[in-house]
Image (tube, rainbow, N blue to C red):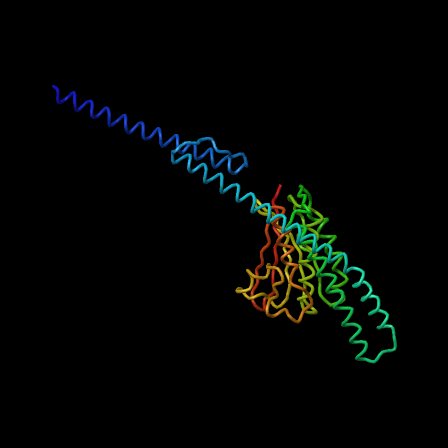
Length: 299
């Protein structure tokens, strides 16, 4: 009889130990969950000041969050300083660049030799390239630092497409490139101003790389979660190995160095797409043209 009692006591103690261990584990997990939740919303503070491992973990997490806050603050400060520097440089160079363009135009009107005319046109082209670069850098730096915010809102994408195409139709016609619109009905959540900026950059590249006699087509496709503006061209295509790189800042594909550009347009497009909850991708084969698709969320 005594043996049964002892066995019952041992079994009870074992069950009690198991229940207590589970309760302690559950309490610890609950506390860890609370700590992580508060860490994510920025309200974490130490609550235990004893010799337990949980208290030590709270102290380490507190030090980590403090260091992360300081690091993030310094990074933001550096970004703000860089953006301010880019803006200052852009402001200070506007007048000199405008003067260079003016004098280049005046030179072209003078009775110069053929070589002199070529030099004057080259000076004007380089000045315009510098002006475009500075404008793109300012826009990009301000988007990166949050000084310029995107304001996505529900709307019809057709007016944005028509405005962008109207801007590049003369350039396409002058080059002998057809600029056509397919199905453009579609709606979504996007910033009209910045989406037009992104679309203009896509059209600029498409017209630039499409040879005379080719065609650039713009169309909208709607999917379950996203709508996409597709810009297809008859250009030289982009090798698969370079497709992931072309959206990097200042990256120029190996077969594009003879074309005008500074390699920042696609990077700016990516910043705009991601800033309004979308993305941009390219589909291309070497020698088979390219299709750039700008995605934004649907309503």
